[in-house]
Image (cartoon, rainbow, N blue to C red):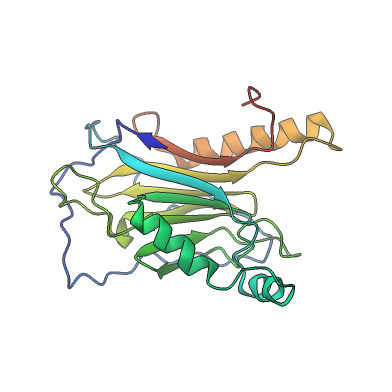
Length: 231
């Protein structure tokens, strides 16, 4: 999907530099299947940046079924074409000039962050049983300006909240200010309706704690497991 009306933070554009090797903020450790909330490292909630129209940005969301190395090896043993899945997906995303990619059911360890294939990747972490898990891939080689000279830097990014079913990342840089939420909602069949509704209400509370406010766009990458019209 494509969207307009993202927000640029005040200050000089973050121009691409071949010598810029800054790494992103470290993620707090958590137990497998645990939860990390409200820990946007170094990002102030004091001021809201003014909105600025930028070019169209390309986003994508996908349920990957698994990106976990052991899961891919098992799939390969079972005769499934899993070899090189991460590399192939990242090449496809880079060729399509996708700025953000949200992944559900990644089943990777976390909370953690890594750089791979020109993307800065955040992982929420799977459950203790190795299920669920969300990821957000941020393209560091795709400009967010019409001029092609404004790039998101690793230090612009911070993990604000993480759970096997959701991942919230804040972007606070000269090139872009936005919040990105990847989520994988619970199935409704066989579940108590109140239990499902409570999960969604809890998620709203997490988002409100971590976000600057409505002046900053919320980019949503969602596998809600709900019928169309219920969200």
